[in-house]
Amino acid sequence: MGFRDLNLRERQVLGIIIQSYVVTAAPVGSRYIARNCNLGLSDATIRNVMAELEDEGYISQPHTSAGRIPTDKGYRYYVDLIMTFQCLDDQEKKRIEENIGPISIDRNGTSSDVLLSAVKVLGTISRQLSVVLSPTLSNAIFEKLDMVLLSSTRMMVILSIQSLFVKTIVMELDLEVSRQTVDGVVDMLNQRLSGLTLAEIRRSITWRLSDCSCDNALKNLIVRSAGTLFDESPIFERLYISGTEYIVDQPEFKQPEKVRELITMIEDKFSMAKLVENSGPSRMDITISIGKENCERQAEALTIVSAPYYVGNMVGKLGILGPKRMDYEHAVRVLNYMADSLSATLSGVN
Image 1 (tube, rainbow, N blue to C red):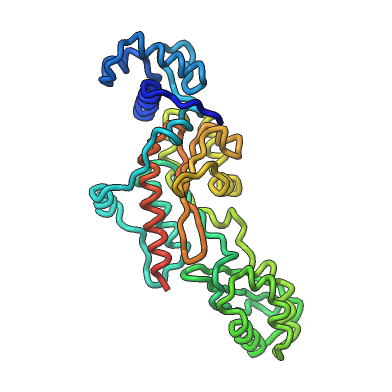
Image 2 (image 1 turned 30 degrees about the horizontal axis):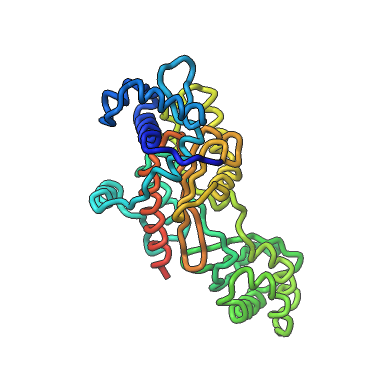
């Protein structure tokens, strides 16, 4: 999306329209700006500036209203060239920690517990629909594996991966194995694969196990199943959502058909995860995808603000989804804070 460099007056007027619309959800007129914003400009001058902004597609006039609202192009200019990126100040952090509490974890907690706690905190702070995607695992370090016989033909394989991450898969067996055989294979797999990434294991498991003397039938089953055992979890299984009640309460979604469309989108976990994973242009680790920039048609009325968090060499994502007139500065501050908190919580647990 190409921009000419707006002059100071145009930037000021566009910024005021966006900031006012964020708060009121009502179109903004030249008289309001002239009377309330101390720009030192007449009503007529502001009207001329607004006409120029409208001609170039930064604002539009809904229906026959005298006021204007921002377009996707206007929001994009604001986010890229006007808005300043800031961190939460100490007072905001203290208020969050006192009222909501930190991301919680207990001694027996798993990554799922931490991520669920994080997405609830993010929803409460942002007052928007919030999502967390667990990290992609290909670069994660494999720590150990265990196998539990469920019956003579079924076995559960439990992989412990870097920090609190656990992956569990139930396998159907076409052979009968004893507990002693299983223990021997588990010991061998842990000796030869521990410390490698899942991607390295998928690439090299055949030759790494080629000379071992354990039960060949079970070993061969593990090798044949390596693509599933040591692969990523499906993207929809990596998604955690909270804060639906905040987004359906926004004026943009008051009509029943809009609410239905929104709920249908939220319930499609695959599409929701893709929206966050594939959201648009990035600035200072923050990605903001506005309206038609989103990859799903149902999300054209939304903005998605997302940020990565890090656990060792793994990367996950947090996101806030809301109407395009969301408070962008606050969303960015909250996401940066939560990304740092989540990275610290997951990385600090061994």
